Amino acid sequence: MNILITGATRGIGKAIADSLNGNIFATGRNENLLKKFKNFIVCDLAKESDLEKLGKYIEDNNIDILINNAGEYIYSPIDNVKYFDIEHITRVNLEAPLYLISKAVPYMKKQKWGRIVNIGSISGVMGEACASLYSATKSGLIGSTKALALELAEFGITVNTINPGWVDTDMGNSSAEDGDWSKEEIVECIPQKRFVKPQEIAGMVKYLISEDAKGVTGQSINLCAGLSVGY
Ligand SMILES: NC(=O)c1ccc[n+]([C@@H]2O[C@H](COP(=O)([O-])OP(=O)(O)OC[C@H]3O[C@@H](n4cnc5c(N)ncnc54)[C@H](OP(=O)(O)O)[C@@H]3O)[C@@H](O)[C@H]2O)c1
Image (tube, rainbow, N blue to C red):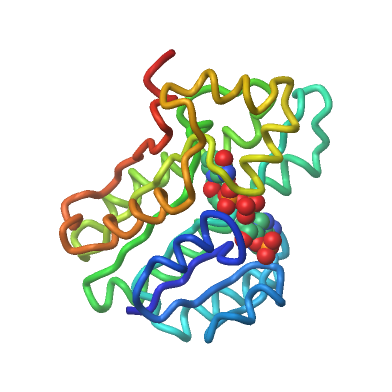
């Protein structure tokens, strides 16, 4: 199986790459960290020319499984937001995944099998103050997941989005620092009183790409240590 993972250099993407069996095609911006993979391509998802290169790479390599994991976070009150911020995060978190799906689907349709997994966020399901741009992009992934699941069901292609809560990665820890609460105060608000491990997200990806999960499509799955169900 040919599996392409965006943002495979660190955090959740790295945990996914480490846990899956198959030919991993890795991408990210950090070439040094990508060099450990046999197949890799450097790509800044915010740059149109890089994205087009990655689209071609997907077409050339018959990708069976696409994991749209890379993403960025912006913590900013709405009145401080610059037009660039809106444009940048929308490109990286929403436009790029949709574009990559458009490039992966023709091969999947031809072989009547495919798996697409997006990494969303609990912030796309619940509100997060001062994260409206991020929340908007992640909600967009959930909406497009439902539409694509319907469109692609007859071709044996499943499309799902996993919504992590706080995860113990660079992003999870730095976004905790960006906000008004300390990490200890955040943990206190999580029902399981802990950050999720990146390996737990990888475990869900492993399930969603398996044959056992062929009936699971169009779903938005919260993996958040209980955060989404109340306090
Ligand atoms: N950590 C959390 O608490 C949390 C919670 C909910 C959802 N998520 C979501 O989970 C996904 C992975 O997050 P993470 O916690 O693993 O983040 P992370 O530790 O910051 O890693 C982000 C990954 O995305 C890549 N990336 C970021 N911007 C990119 C760009 N412009 N072009 C190409 N690659 C880019 C990075 O690669 P390079 O540095 O090599 O470019 C890196 O591999 C994201 O979509 C995030 O929104 C995370």
